[in-house]
Image 1 (cartoon, rainbow, N blue to C red):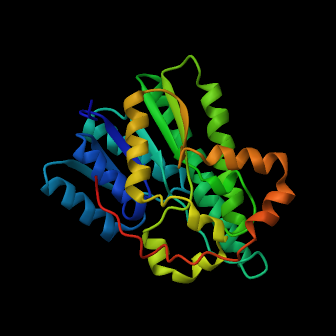
Image 2 (image 1 turned 45 degrees about the horizontal axis):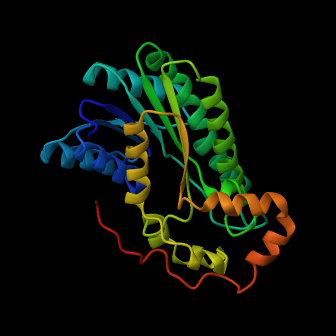
Length: 276
């Protein structure tokens, strides 16, 4: 089963993982609204998808503005007639330690990654509850294991996304709305790591022994969840919950063990991947 006739709205969809999702959704037959503040990149992606047989619409979307979300939902419904799928990708962060990170940048991480998610869900729920819908939030394994390596604001934001999504899923039982949380590990080969090659120096050596997760892996997990049509939590790789369990049983010991061997030696910006 493909995503034929599904209508999807993707935040942070102009580049990075969101753009990969938009391309693969269109390849699967979905019609896609690309929401982002990056107008040039968003309109180029819109034109690319439309030129290759897909259907896409770009809307300028600042996820921290409720009015922007309302306009994005209205534009999607006006253009395509309905809204079936929401994917929350948008996040910004400054990869620095707490003492080095500007406080306003840390707060912006929460505004974009968490507040933006809350605003979008409030905007799409009335539409989805009248029909059927699927909300998919991109969380992170970092939100389950605060062991250092990732910025504190990013970890806190993803922890909030993880728990909010699971709470929302419980609330939506018995309704027409399905809710899925995607929790990937380190997503290699992204624009972020290519533009910030020193970021990997913050990551523990252990991540070098975990299979690489790439943007298409995340996008395909999202597509698979939509096809299943059930609320779920999806970890990539699938064995990550074992690490979460060990951390919950002994957080101090886990943190110390992760520091053995120093920092990662892999350049995550150089990891190659292809659409599949």
